[in-house]
Length: 225
Image 1 (cartoon, rainbow, N blue to C red):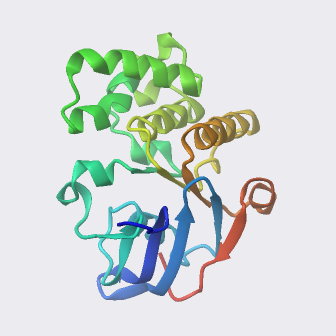
Image 2 (cartoon, rainbow, N blue to C red):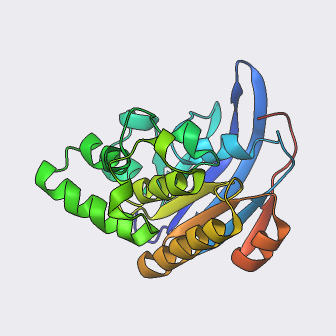
């Protein structure tokens, strides 16, 4: 769309679960190259909004737009060229990772989902592992054999596989020790600068919001989620 702003937006989004409304007419935008902090009480709908923006949860009303173009559908109903522009890093790496996969296969998941040539997968995985600070000896291990911090680094590598334009971080450093928090934040910040990515930062940590976010949005309280 000519002249459209380069941003990921939720426009008048109402969403919930089983008739329980969690978000009611919410607007939020994340521009390319900016970091937006999202603040709100526990159970207030922050994670639901992340899932809507990540095209994982269909809103009941309203819409998501990418660079001014409305997106219909969720998950694999969305064309790969659109859905791979948005990535999400969740709070719990254990919940986000298939315990049966090695870290190599975990990072490679998005590439295989888009039928990336197999001979190009291992070099890309090695590149991403190095980027996030995973040593080669860890890549053949499964999630139960690595720490939470190592697993979250693998999840970050997976999120960056397709070089997304928008990265949504849902309490992504909350379960990590201080040194791993700092490393993950540095990797994301460096990636953002290099690729002019928009970052949505959901956190309860006011110091992190002050240090990292260009602006902070308070989510209106409606329900739980």
